[in-house]
Length: 301
Ligand SMILES: Cc1ncc(COP(=O)(O)O)c(C=O)c1O
Image 1 (tube, protein in one colour):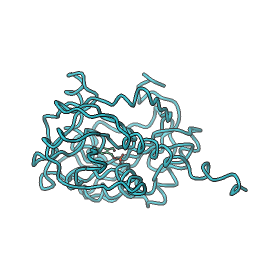
Image 2 (cartoon, rainbow, N blue to C red; image 1 turned 180 degrees about the vertical axis):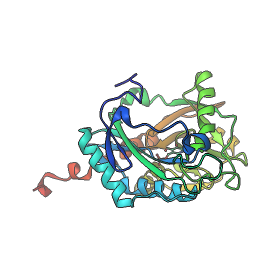
Image 3 (cartoon, rainbow, N blue to C red; image 1 turned 30 degrees about the vertical axis):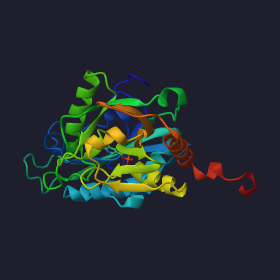
Image 4 (tube, helix red, strand yellow; image 1 turned 90 degrees about the horizontal axis):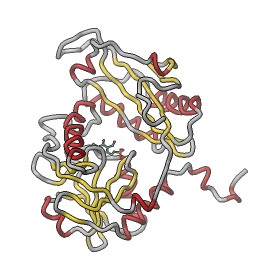
């Protein structure tokens, strides 16, 4: 599938309650979501035929819509079922799941009080590959020029398409400088997150991660905090100043796409891929497996 443009793939897309051929799932150019960023979405991953933490992603999608002032016209259970059904129809087992909701075309102006809310779900193959050797080298991050906005400037906790404009700018700039991604500070100058994942540091056996008060509180972040605590690792959610990175021993990212990805450098700062990072990488990959397939044989049937 690599290289095939996303509007030319095979399969079906769930579009406002109907299954439509992939290439027919189109919106008009005069769509409010396109012009004014009135769109929210989720990024989910299916492992072994089950969407990991589906209910939490759906709840966040609905919440993101509410934060943008609109109500998604399907219940959480309808959205969950649509995603499960589409995954089953796709025949895919390890896949990426992308629900998106946006304001339609009835009004074309800043105000769009009466626009319909549209919802689509697309699923594409995303094998759960894991090449420990490559990943364990750690990725290199640049420091982003743009900062995560003040919650009084933008609805910063929503997974809203408009907030990704500065992420794309930051990621493109990092890639142009030869880095994999960029670390963004927040509006106060504190460490925040990367363009598509949350960040953790390890120092003296303790995990440190920024308080998610002006950026996306990742579902993977939450899973990893619980996995660390289950191992007796202390987790401190707190303000992290950029210069503190010089004392941190390990660093990793968490996200649906990133899973747990070690980081070897951020701008001038260097990190080792250490024991805690490796342990949480393994714990996370174990956690995302469908629980039914990890049941002991004796419990089956
Ligand atoms: C900006 C940003 N931060 C954090 C995350 C991690 O969120 P999650 O773990 O829910 O995928 C994502 C990925 O969706 C993201 O795009």
